[in-house]
Length: 532
Image (spheres, one colour):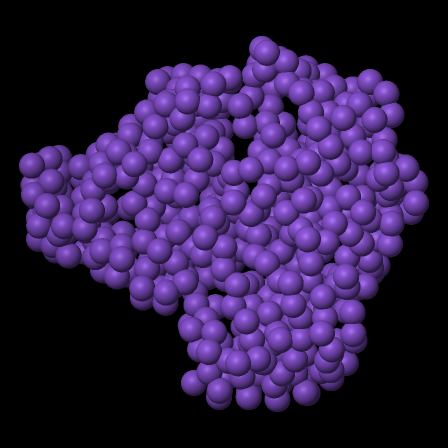
C-alpha cells in the first residue's frame, strides 16, 4: 500500500510540481510541512506553523534543552533573581547582531518583550501575553543589562521565556513594516534570516553569517552548516512521503501514523524521536451543561472507553494512551493522581450510571429525571478526530450514553469552539510543565477559552496562584499535585493520547535531532549538514 501511494504521489509531483522535483542543492535543505502560518510575528500568532519557523529566525533570552526541563543561556549569558522572586536581571551577550548587521542591545530586548505584553505603540495584543507573568516593568539598564520586574513571583517565568513569543525582534523593522511585519519581512537574531515567502507554498530562509551564539546543547554554536532552509508546504501526506523517499526533500515531522512504520523501514530514511514531547489529545466536558455536569456521566465515559485500543486504532503506534492530565515526563507530574483516574471497565461504567439514577430508556439511551444521557461534541474536522469520535461514540452507546458529533473545517472551528453551543469537545495542546498546563486550562479567568470546560472552582484558582508564585520548587509541585488529584476525581477531561514527535530525514542530511518545544520538531538546526 505504501509503495502504491508513494508511486502515485511521485506521478502527481511530476505533473503538478515539476519545479520542485529535483534534489536540493548542496548545503541547502528542504523541510516539508502540511500547512502554512498566516504570518510570522511572534506576538500575533500562536500557531505551530508560525513558531517552528520563528525559532530559526529569532532567539530568546534563554533556551530550553531537549530534556524539556533545563534552561540554558542564549541571548542572556547569565542572570540573577532577587530573593523575593520579583526581579530578574539578565546580562546579555555583547556579540549578537540582527540579520541586517545592527548590534543587538538590551533596549531591543525590552522593546520586544513590552510589545508582547501590549505596552508599545501601536499596541499589539498577544493572546498569550499572560505567559510573561504579572509584569511591573521591563527596562534596559544599559546596552547589555535587562531588568525584568514582576508584581508577583512567577515560578515558570524562565520556561515561558524560552518560547517563541518571547523572541527578540528589531524595533526599526517593526516600525518600517507596521502591520506587515512578519508578512513582508522580519529582522531577528536567529541563525537564519528572512529570504522570501510565498504563502501556502514555501518560505526560504538564508544563513545568518555572523551567528555565533547558539545554545550549548549544540555541538556547532554557529553559523549554521547549511546555507539555506526552504520550508515547503505539501498538503498531501502521500506526496510528503514520496518526496522524502525520492530525495526531493530532506526533513519532515508531518508523516501520518499509517505511514510511520513502513517509512521507518526505508533504508534511505532515518527516524528521530523525542521522548520528552508534551502534546496531548483530550476530550473536554463543559461541566456546567446538562448531562455532562454529572460526575457520574463523566467518570462513566472514562470507564467505557478503552483508551489503549483507541490509541492503537487511531495513531497506529505513534502515540501512547494517556490517563492523567499531565505527561509523566513533565516537571511536577503527580503519580498518585495518575492512579486515581478511572480506567477501562465497562461493567463499572454501567454500575456507576445505575447508582447515580441513570436508567435505560426505550431506545437504550439512559434517562434520569426526564433528561436523556445525550450530549453534543464539537471538533476540528481531521482524520484523527473522525476516527476517535466514531470509536468513543460506539463505546459510550454500549453503556447507554449517546454522543453526537459535529466536525468543522479549521477555518471556522476555532470560532465555534469559543461558543457555548456544545457540551464536549476534542482538542490537543502543547505545554512545558504541569504548572504550565494547569494554568493554561483550569483557571476561572480563562473562561470561555481556553478554559472551555467553564471550570470555576475557587480552590483550584487558589492552588494555581500559590503554585504560580511559589519560590520553592517543592511548593510549586505540591500545589500542582493537589490540582491533578482534584481533576482526576472530578473527571472533567478524558485525556486520550500522548502524541509522539517523530521526525524523518533523508540520508542526504546528518546531525538532525528532534527537539519539540511547543510542538516544533526542529529548533535552531545548527548541527544539520548535507553530505551530498
